[in-house]
Amino acid sequence: MQGLSRIVPQWDVPANVGAMVTTRLGGHSQAPYASLNLAAHVGDSMDSLLQNLAVLEESLPGSLSLQWLRQEHGSGIALIDSARDPISADALLTQTPGVACCVLTADCLPVLLASARGDEVAIVHAGWRGMAAGLIEKTVHSMSNPPEQLHAWLGPAIGRCHFEVGEEVRRQLLAGEENPADLAACFIAKGYNNKYMADLYGLARCKLHRLRLSTVTGGDLCTYCDSERFFSYRRDGTTGRMASLIYIEEGIQ
Ligand SMILES: [Zn+2]
Image (tube, rainbow, N blue to C red):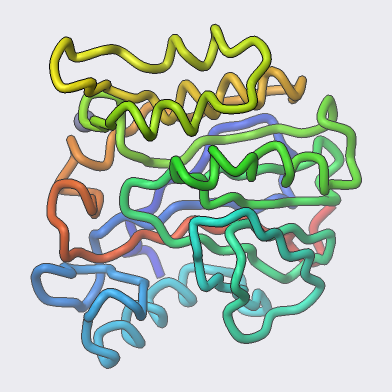
Protein backbone atom coordinates (compact mmCIF):
# COMPACT_ATOMS: atom_id res chain seq x y z
CA MET A 1 0.00 0.00 0.00
CA GLN A 2 1.34 3.40 -1.00
CA GLY A 3 -0.44 5.25 1.78
CA LEU A 4 1.64 4.16 4.74
CA SER A 5 3.88 6.96 5.95
CA ARG A 6 7.10 5.43 7.16
CA ILE A 7 10.65 6.37 8.03
CA VAL A 8 13.27 4.30 6.25
CA PRO A 9 16.85 4.34 7.53
CA GLN A 10 19.48 5.72 5.19
CA TRP A 11 22.37 3.45 6.10
CA ASP A 12 25.10 1.36 4.59
CA VAL A 13 23.51 -2.10 4.65
CA PRO A 14 22.84 -4.54 1.78
CA ALA A 15 19.55 -4.37 -0.16
CA ASN A 16 18.26 -7.57 1.41
CA VAL A 17 17.96 -5.87 4.82
CA GLY A 18 14.53 -4.30 5.20
CA ALA A 19 13.97 -1.72 7.93
CA MET A 20 11.36 0.91 8.72
CA VAL A 21 9.56 2.80 11.45
CA THR A 22 5.87 3.63 11.20
CA THR A 23 4.50 7.06 12.09
CA ARG A 24 1.12 7.81 13.62
CA LEU A 25 -0.27 8.71 10.17
CA GLY A 26 -2.47 6.56 7.94
CA GLY A 27 -4.33 4.40 10.47
CA HIS A 28 -7.87 3.86 11.76
CA SER A 29 -7.68 4.62 15.50
CA GLN A 30 -9.48 7.53 17.14
CA ALA A 31 -7.91 10.03 19.56
CA PRO A 32 -5.85 9.66 21.70
CA TYR A 33 -4.56 6.76 19.58
CA ALA A 34 -4.98 8.48 16.21
CA SER A 35 -4.30 7.09 14.00
CA LEU A 36 -1.83 4.25 13.32
CA ASN A 37 -1.50 2.79 16.80
CA LEU A 38 0.10 -0.66 16.66
CA ALA A 39 0.04 -1.64 20.35
CA ALA A 40 -2.57 -3.87 21.99
CA HIS A 41 -1.74 -2.89 25.58
CA VAL A 42 -2.56 0.84 25.52
CA GLY A 43 -6.38 0.76 25.63
CA ASP A 44 -7.17 1.24 21.94
CA SER A 45 -10.06 -0.69 20.37
CA MET A 46 -9.16 -4.13 19.02
CA ASP A 47 -11.02 -3.38 15.78
CA SER A 48 -8.87 -0.32 15.10
CA LEU A 49 -5.70 -2.19 16.01
CA LEU A 50 -6.48 -5.04 13.64
CA GLN A 51 -7.19 -2.58 10.82
CA ASN A 52 -3.91 -0.80 11.57
CA LEU A 53 -1.97 -4.08 11.54
CA ALA A 54 -3.53 -4.81 8.13
CA VAL A 55 -2.31 -1.41 6.87
CA LEU A 56 1.19 -2.26 8.10
CA GLU A 57 1.18 -5.77 6.62
CA GLU A 58 0.02 -4.49 3.22
CA SER A 59 3.13 -2.33 3.09
CA LEU A 60 5.46 -5.29 3.70
CA PRO A 61 6.59 -8.27 1.61
CA GLY A 62 3.74 -10.82 1.61
CA SER A 63 5.81 -13.70 2.93
CA LEU A 64 7.13 -11.76 5.92
CA SER A 65 5.96 -12.82 9.39
CA LEU A 66 6.18 -10.41 12.30
CA GLN A 67 7.56 -11.22 15.75
CA TRP A 68 6.33 -8.90 18.50
CA LEU A 69 7.59 -8.48 22.04
CA ARG A 70 5.93 -8.23 25.42
CA GLN A 71 8.30 -5.43 26.41
CA GLU A 72 9.42 -5.33 30.04
CA HIS A 73 12.09 -2.61 30.23
CA GLY A 74 14.46 -5.43 31.13
CA SER A 75 17.47 -7.03 29.50
CA GLY A 76 16.03 -10.17 27.89
CA ILE A 77 17.09 -11.02 24.33
CA ALA A 78 15.36 -13.61 22.15
CA LEU A 79 17.04 -15.32 19.19
CA ILE A 80 14.29 -16.28 16.74
CA ASP A 81 14.03 -18.33 13.53
CA SER A 82 10.25 -18.10 13.12
CA ALA A 83 7.43 -15.88 14.41
CA ARG A 84 5.10 -16.89 17.21
CA ASP A 85 3.15 -15.26 20.04
CA PRO A 86 4.75 -12.18 21.61
CA ILE A 87 7.92 -12.99 23.55
CA SER A 88 8.69 -11.43 26.94
CA ALA A 89 11.97 -9.66 26.20
CA ASP A 90 13.31 -6.29 25.04
CA ALA A 91 15.52 -7.30 22.13
CA LEU A 92 15.17 -9.64 19.16
CA LEU A 93 17.85 -11.17 16.98
CA THR A 94 17.55 -13.31 13.85
CA GLN A 95 19.61 -14.81 11.05
CA THR A 96 16.53 -16.19 9.30
CA PRO A 97 15.11 -14.47 6.19
CA GLY A 98 11.39 -13.70 6.25
CA VAL A 99 11.01 -13.01 9.98
CA ALA A 100 10.71 -9.40 11.14
CA CYS A 101 11.99 -8.29 14.54
CA CYS A 102 9.48 -5.67 15.79
CA VAL A 103 9.55 -3.18 18.66
CA LEU A 104 6.82 -0.77 19.79
CA THR A 105 7.77 2.66 21.10
CA ALA A 106 6.51 6.13 21.97
CA ASP A 107 9.67 7.90 23.31
CA CYS A 108 11.90 4.91 24.05
CA LEU A 109 14.69 4.45 21.53
CA PRO A 110 14.51 1.71 18.89
CA VAL A 111 18.04 0.59 17.98
CA LEU A 112 18.20 -1.30 14.69
CA LEU A 113 21.26 -3.46 13.98
CA ALA A 114 22.32 -5.20 10.77
CA SER A 115 25.46 -6.96 9.62
CA ALA A 116 27.45 -5.69 6.64
CA ARG A 117 26.87 -9.05 4.96
CA GLY A 118 23.10 -8.85 5.43
CA ASP A 119 23.00 -12.20 7.19
CA GLU A 120 21.97 -11.04 10.67
CA VAL A 121 19.67 -8.36 12.09
CA ALA A 122 18.55 -7.33 15.56
CA ILE A 123 16.43 -4.71 17.29
CA VAL A 124 16.59 -3.26 20.80
CA HIS A 125 13.86 -1.53 22.81
CA ALA A 126 16.24 0.90 24.47
CA GLY A 127 14.57 3.03 27.08
CA TRP A 128 16.68 4.31 29.93
CA ARG A 129 16.02 1.20 32.00
CA GLY A 130 17.13 -1.13 29.21
CA MET A 131 20.22 0.99 28.65
CA ALA A 132 21.03 0.95 32.36
CA ALA A 133 20.68 -2.85 32.25
CA GLY A 134 23.28 -3.01 29.45
CA LEU A 135 20.82 -4.24 26.84
CA ILE A 136 22.53 -2.57 23.88
CA GLU A 137 25.88 -4.13 24.80
CA LYS A 138 24.29 -7.52 25.50
CA THR A 139 22.50 -7.56 22.16
CA VAL A 140 25.61 -6.63 20.17
CA HIS A 141 27.59 -9.32 22.01
CA SER A 142 24.84 -11.87 21.27
CA MET A 143 25.24 -11.40 17.53
CA SER A 144 27.41 -13.83 15.57
CA ASN A 145 29.00 -11.04 13.48
CA PRO A 146 31.77 -9.07 15.24
CA PRO A 147 30.79 -5.48 16.18
CA GLU A 148 33.12 -4.09 13.50
CA GLN A 149 30.88 -5.78 10.91
CA LEU A 150 27.65 -4.26 12.29
CA HIS A 151 25.76 -1.11 11.41
CA ALA A 152 23.35 0.63 13.80
CA TRP A 153 20.51 3.06 13.14
CA LEU A 154 18.71 4.96 15.87
CA GLY A 155 14.96 5.45 15.31
CA PRO A 156 12.64 8.18 16.61
CA ALA A 157 12.89 8.73 20.38
CA ILE A 158 12.46 11.52 22.90
CA GLY A 159 15.24 14.04 22.33
CA ARG A 160 17.45 15.82 24.84
CA CYS A 161 15.21 18.86 24.25
CA HIS A 162 12.43 17.08 26.19
CA PHE A 163 13.82 14.17 28.21
CA GLU A 164 14.10 15.48 31.78
CA VAL A 165 15.34 12.99 34.37
CA GLY A 166 16.24 13.04 38.04
CA GLU A 167 19.52 12.25 39.75
CA GLU A 168 18.50 8.62 40.36
CA VAL A 169 18.05 7.91 36.64
CA ARG A 170 21.39 9.55 35.88
CA ARG A 171 23.06 7.53 38.63
CA GLN A 172 21.70 4.25 37.26
CA LEU A 173 22.80 5.07 33.72
CA LEU A 174 26.35 5.84 34.87
CA ALA A 175 26.57 3.00 37.44
CA GLY A 176 29.24 0.37 36.93
CA GLU A 177 31.08 2.45 34.32
CA GLU A 178 34.81 2.73 34.99
CA ASN A 179 35.33 5.81 32.86
CA PRO A 180 31.94 7.39 32.31
CA ALA A 181 33.05 10.82 31.05
CA ASP A 182 31.49 10.35 27.59
CA LEU A 183 28.24 9.08 29.09
CA ALA A 184 28.18 11.81 31.76
CA ALA A 185 28.39 14.39 28.98
CA CYS A 186 24.94 13.21 27.86
CA PHE A 187 23.37 14.88 30.93
CA ILE A 188 22.97 18.65 31.15
CA ALA A 189 22.16 19.87 34.67
CA LYS A 190 19.12 22.14 34.81
CA GLY A 191 20.45 23.89 37.90
CA TYR A 192 17.57 23.07 40.23
CA ASN A 193 16.04 20.05 42.00
CA ASN A 194 18.82 17.78 40.74
CA LYS A 195 17.14 17.59 37.34
CA TYR A 196 18.95 16.91 34.07
CA MET A 197 18.13 16.94 30.38
CA ALA A 198 19.25 13.52 29.20
CA ASP A 199 20.38 12.59 25.70
CA LEU A 200 19.21 9.02 25.02
CA TYR A 201 20.61 9.22 21.49
CA GLY A 202 23.96 10.38 22.83
CA LEU A 203 24.06 7.56 25.37
CA ALA A 204 23.31 4.97 22.67
CA ARG A 205 25.94 6.47 20.36
CA CYS A 206 28.57 6.35 23.12
CA LYS A 207 27.78 2.72 23.85
CA LEU A 208 27.82 1.71 20.17
CA HIS A 209 31.05 3.57 19.48
CA ARG A 210 32.67 1.95 22.52
CA LEU A 211 31.63 -1.41 21.08
CA ARG A 212 33.38 -0.38 17.83
CA LEU A 213 30.42 -0.69 15.51
CA SER A 214 31.14 0.05 11.88
CA THR A 215 28.63 2.93 11.60
CA VAL A 216 25.99 4.55 13.81
CA THR A 217 23.42 6.73 12.01
CA GLY A 218 19.96 8.18 12.66
CA GLY A 219 19.13 9.72 16.01
CA ASP A 220 17.84 13.09 14.88
CA LEU A 221 14.07 12.87 15.44
CA CYS A 222 12.35 13.88 18.70
CA THR A 223 9.02 12.13 19.30
CA TYR A 224 7.90 14.81 21.77
CA CYS A 225 8.63 17.69 19.37
CA ASP A 226 6.82 16.22 16.37
CA SER A 227 3.21 15.62 17.44
CA GLU A 228 2.13 15.35 13.80
CA ARG A 229 4.17 12.24 13.08
CA PHE A 230 4.93 10.63 16.42
CA PHE A 231 3.22 9.32 19.53
CA SER A 232 4.94 10.51 22.71
CA TYR A 233 4.20 9.05 26.12
CA ARG A 234 5.83 11.97 27.93
CA ARG A 235 3.82 14.48 25.95
CA ASP A 236 0.43 12.76 25.87
CA GLY A 237 0.34 10.04 28.55
CA THR A 238 -2.41 7.88 27.07
CA THR A 239 -1.33 7.42 23.47
CA GLY A 240 -0.46 4.89 20.76
CA ARG A 241 2.81 3.27 19.76
CA MET A 242 4.87 3.29 16.55
CA ALA A 243 6.44 0.07 15.29
CA SER A 244 10.07 -0.35 14.27
CA LEU A 245 10.84 -3.39 12.12
CA ILE A 246 13.98 -5.00 10.75
CA TYR A 247 14.21 -8.18 8.67
CA ILE A 248 16.23 -10.10 6.13
CA GLU A 249 14.18 -10.27 2.96
CA GLU A 250 13.76 -13.64 1.29
CA GLY A 251 15.02 -14.13 -2.25
CA ILE A 252 17.12 -10.96 -2.48
CA GLN A 253 20.91 -11.07 -2.66
ZN1 LIG B 1 11.93 17.51 21.70
